[in-house]
Length: 590
Image (tube, rainbow, N blue to C red; front, side, top):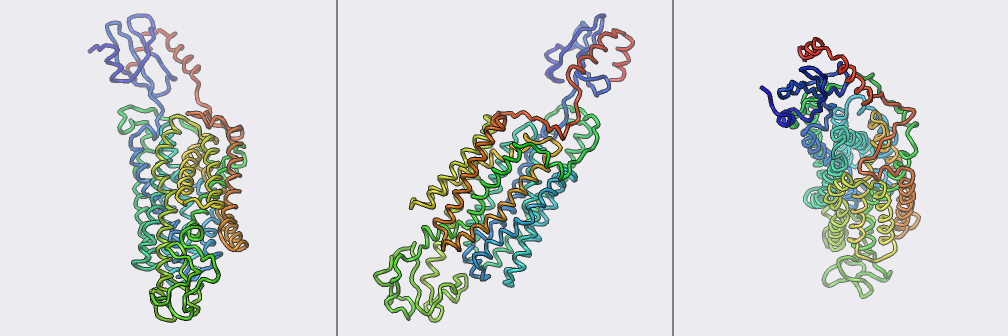
């Protein structure tokens, strides 16, 4: 039955017709006759035939990309939750396991050192095995690493604690690489910045939950039990990652077969066979300069965000919440006795919840372990009840304050990611976030402003930078090297995250505190980030476009696709044939 052209288009999609002469016409061929074609209809009484070539099949054409995003985000919650376990209960962990400041910072250094190299291979594995398979493998390492760390803490073995953090690092950073590759594949040409921003936002909810839950759970249970609970959270993350496997495998089969995308109702074209080429780690040296500038920017900016969070509790305690008494004369009225109502601090002491109460002479402050119940008494020799009560309250408040950046990131990142998709400005956002970090750490170092203000600035800067950085990577490298590129960025980032905590500890020991010495170090890193981001604006202005153009690397040529001119020439050849028998055979074949 004949239909109107409009009705046919609404059913089969847009078509363009050209007359061939004679009673019947052969419609537009947008590709060569050897490629799959679909007959949409024979139109009207004129007997014109319209043939529509289908679009190229991609995972991003499917609405399944949204459940994939949801599972990816949930899987990353466990990763971020346990990564920040030591920071959230820094004081309690150091006291329980008898760690020095240097040993505590080494918990993050040993996590990062293997990842200076491993993400190269993690990104390569994503390109070779597929992002979903690699993602699940890396998630399994989280369970093993956190369990070993919890066991090492239980037996107070610093060596086992370090080993657990190393194993955890094998999965943690590579899992982040796998998640980025997975989303860049499923959201190619779609809402990539929004997807990655949502991934950062939901993932960072793990950090926020850790900041609130871990100090509270330490009070209710003990330090080891809090870490074992983290291993359970990692198990839930692995379950989410495993659920991605059948979804991604089904999408791979659909793309290979050229079947319709779920939720779109459109048939898809089978991709032309291409020679299988897999990038190797050596291909990274041929990446262009703009990619390496972005990578250095990532190193220095993340260097004053993540290492800061590792020691933020101690910074806030020293600066605002558990300050040392300004006078050396501060003591109890009877220094040899425990503090009681009859033996309060003398007049040289500052009173209030944010000042350290004085201890009796018999108690060495370095020996006090407020996580152990024997110190919560007013009986010799462990009479530190007032001191520990003040410390525990200050630690709990510090955890709430330094959770502000991650909480803001969880709220703002989706909106900023959506804005990047709509407006562009990736390089500009990198510059703006770096400049904001200079202001944030300057305020912490040299002012007495309430800590909530710089923490809010840190959250805004982190959200802006993460929303701009990660979606920029695919635009600076060839498509076949996206996994490798994310691995390179993560590896260089971890080189900084291995070195900077050691610099923080050395600066702390040299200056005798965190304020202003350690904060001055973070200011210097933020200035470095501002300079590299400015360079990025100059050498890669295309990143500020809504849809940046990708200039392929000369050393990594992509397989050439047939041009539109070639398609038109082939179609014209078919038109010039004008042979009714040829037309009949085409119809029969279709």
